[in-house]
Length: 197
Image 1 (tube, rainbow, N blue to C red):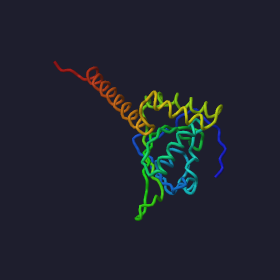
Image 2 (cartoon, one colour):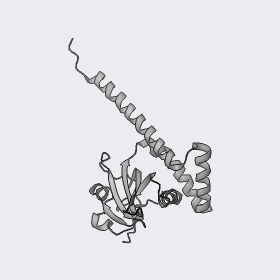
Image 3 (tube, one colour):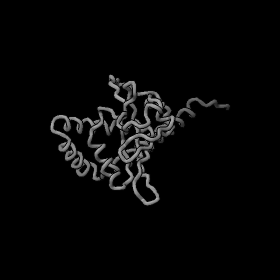
Image 4 (cartoon, rainbow, N blue to C red):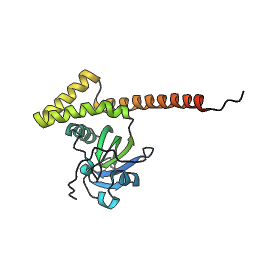
């Protein structure tokens, strides 16, 4: 499938309480997509099956993030990533993806299952500048330079590998959002409850 699309700087509307699920073979060819995936990316299941998973790759995503993903999966390690995906109509959606490895009875890798959840806005605010920098390095100096910067950034600024960084960032921002919503709920109760004295 070859779709040339205009990129629209607009988030697609989707049910962020749901989980997007897809399965691929070892080469990243889509074998299964749940309805949440189809509805969110605006492709029908029929359009997705048999296509490379990068059909939804957004041009704002640096290649080094996917290199880190594939390096981990090929070593048999489960992996998490924060990803900006592209819809069929050119819109976007941000997710955290938990990649797990599917194996046959002999223990050989047969493919991958990806489960995606929406991320809090705080995650996007923190990861977007990093991805922008990586993309700029990639465009002007090449993918290797981007990878070297990425690894140095993780070592010097974060002190964790990408997988740990992503999981911790997601957990921290989710906790902050829950606390903020809890405080808002408490204030709403205080300001809008009926007092009978």
